[in-house]
Image (cartoon, rainbow, N blue to C red; front, side, top):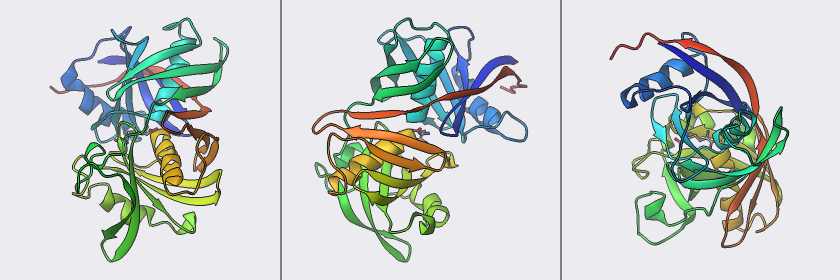
Length: 287
Ligand SMILES: N[C@H](CCC[C@H](N)C(=O)O)C(=O)O
């Protein structure tokens, strides 16, 4: 198969994008294709695959697959890249439009021109905080804030937040000493999270600034995670470490995101999105 693609990234969290307004794929191809394109040796190299597709309810739709082929419900960096691509390629006319995800719909506003969108703001909607909706095992109806979390020999404290996809947020004193590579791969598959979980470690710099590292469900360590940054700011506010309604700067490995959670309302994410490669992926798909 000859598959047209574009590679874009949000703060170096990169995906291979396929425009299904122009190209068709069979459902059973999607997971193996995500694995194939993400492979840095035999594929293009990315953190996964994102499909941009027609939607009956929104201006455009997005599906996201991690590099292990698993499909996720939402992707913050992916949303900003989809918004950039949709506006620059005339899939939408206005600079503000809706994007359908598996988790629901969001509203995006692009900043820049048709020739080059350099930044996107997304209303990510309200976080999901009830334990059983994260989902996380335990007493239903409760929020998970600063809860003791036994992880091997360590006793951590977890705050769990869903942005349509699950996040386990841990606050550390020094981000450079966060157990990202030891605890990340273990916690992401912990049975207390029946659907797995994205794992974030946060060091607060001030009440409006934090350092952030992530082990993503299905992709491992990535340079940035947009839904994770949203979850981290929500968790900081739930723990009294940051204020409602004001932009918090999140320093991710790949760059900065600016996140605001309106009390009892939406989480807003603002950040860059860049295109790097376009071309044809030659794929020998064995059914
Ligand atoms: N690994 C995530 C999906 C990608 C999210 C991330 N790349 C972002 O920018 O939000 C999950 O399985 O829920």
